[in-house]
Length: 297
Ligand code: GLY
Image (cartoon, rainbow, N blue to C red; front, side, top):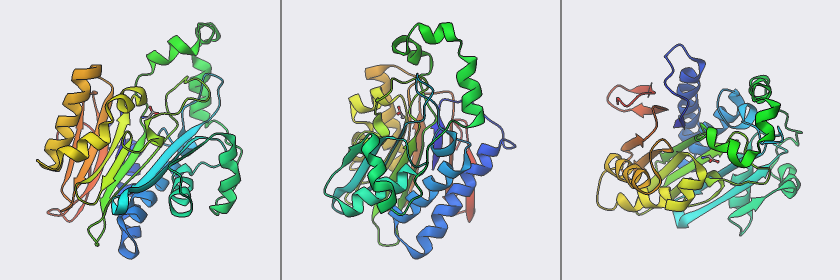
């Protein structure tokens, strides 16, 4: 599980630390009865509920001060998967993406009409409003600065603390899920990597799974998660994560991305070119969930 690259380091006392550990535990509980996909979706859903991360209840805001959410889910079994973008009527877009994956032929649904499927997915139809923290941050960006236009302003908020999970079920099938508010001051209507298979996430039964965080425009350009999965053909999950981040750093510069990976044996990897990336995983040797934020493992 990752809690996003880019917000800088935070300490163990920070509620996000417990949020990460709790999310992995929620995922593991779901996997006792279900698949890796169930686990990844439950873990990400826990982050969406928490309001602590840039997703669900804690999402960042567009240049108009609105919440527009992106999310996706993918199972390595037959490359099944789907994404949703610009979702405004549930704080649980990852569950909506799961519904699209399980019930339609499509891999991407976006915009106001995603509301039509929220009820079908047995989710509550909500009018999403900014969290107190997001509203305060939005106000802190001066009216004048806002006036200079989101086109320029968005560059100041390079990375966005998207959340995501990768897992391998007891059936050996890898899965990934991701959810985000996108980027601060993004243009209304913008869709980022987190809705797009191959970019913000990827899972392939022959390779493993990967999930990204960072500047969506750069992650899409290099097809980061598909690339990381392909690197697992010839290397470990850790090596594949590092290679994919080296690649995006070379092509698009540093300070823009992080990734988590899992191979078919359940070995995990993580890499990022930002100052920090919160992440947590089940450590088999320690027999418990561990979390870290800095470059150490
Ligand atoms: N990685 C999140 C976004 O750019 O939308």
